[in-house]
Image 1 (tube, protein in one colour):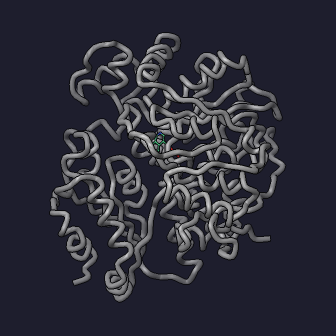
Image 2: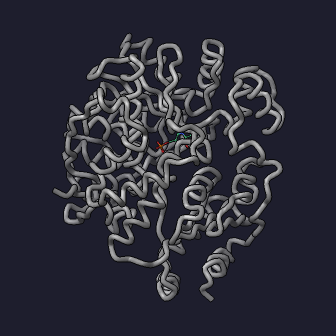
Image 3: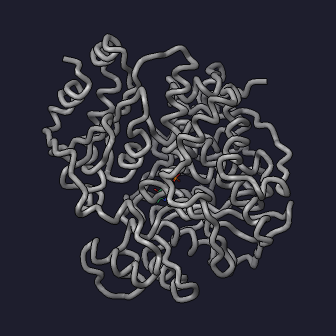
Length: 495
Ligand SMILES: *Cc1c(COP(=O)(O)O)cnc(C)c1O
């Protein structure tokens, strides 16, 4: 039987996994979502000795069931290789009463690497399966991190090109160097004289420009998107929750079948949704704890049943969670209202027109799985300090948000279920925040902070940061907003 992916906004829009990956978003604006998942009999006595790649194969073959075994082997082997600085890919570290699942051992030392290292292969394989032999061109606007992670994933992947636009004065020195030193003959980085919104707006316009699309097709190329709504990014994230459970069994921290809780620092709701799907296919999960920073729209949603984006946007030290509309939440909403596309569509239209929606008639058994909380900036810094003092381990600010929310949950409920904290970034990605939280003093610039972080934590400086100051700058193009399309046409040889 082939798994059906249905648009969350149209019950007649049903596709297979490879079609969903190739299309990205449904044309009706919905998200392709699995309507019925098989529950596997996960044998953790056996899985505890499986490699990350073997677990990936089990999980991906479940969700991407129109891929052949060879296709999955190719995608998995190409993605989870020495791009990761540890062979276990996603290590679990015990810190006091919590287990930090380190998802930051890939090229850009943050969890987006877990999915973006395999997406390019899933995408090109899906294209082949659908009889599309056009070159896949990824266009992205980035405020720093996602664009870099996408480039690292697509770098030198046959049959692809990637063009990334970033605001010239809107990223940190480290972020800029990470992008401008990117290797790979198919990667193109362009700084624009404008802000992130300008970049985003023109990228969206190019996606929808029919003339440009024709021009691309005439050159055997087509645009595609690497955004987090693509099922090809969501599914690879289920893998590490299955893997982490197996590792906890292996280390003797839990017995096979014992429930665990999972706490996730949440922005777009992709990572925690993957944890929900891990439970659906058979990982014994009790609570899914959704942690937010001061942009606590999800905390309010889970507490009141009303999603209300009409509020001030706060800039925090955990920028990847500074989000007011969590796009992947739409998939959970769809499940909460009984997989009803009509109901989901009505709620999403309300969000677009009135800035809010309120749930009614929901599947309480799904809602009850979720707990939610948020951490203030002060609580986040204090948590980094607390964990350091207790374990000599330094968390990044996103992880610390989750950690703080979890500790408060334990204090409130006394629920001592073993709990995984999704650790989404290396502290080396946010060295100044980490150092200032631990020492209470000014950290100096990024590179000084990196050195201090090394002195305090004794963790080797990852290659994503080490050598950045001296790496060759390969991308120096700066264009006006009005010249973004010209840059695309030049790179792709469309003139
Ligand atoms: C993207 C990101 C998140 C949020 O993940 P979602 O899947 O969007 O909820 C959290 N932490 C870091 C470091 C991230 O890059």
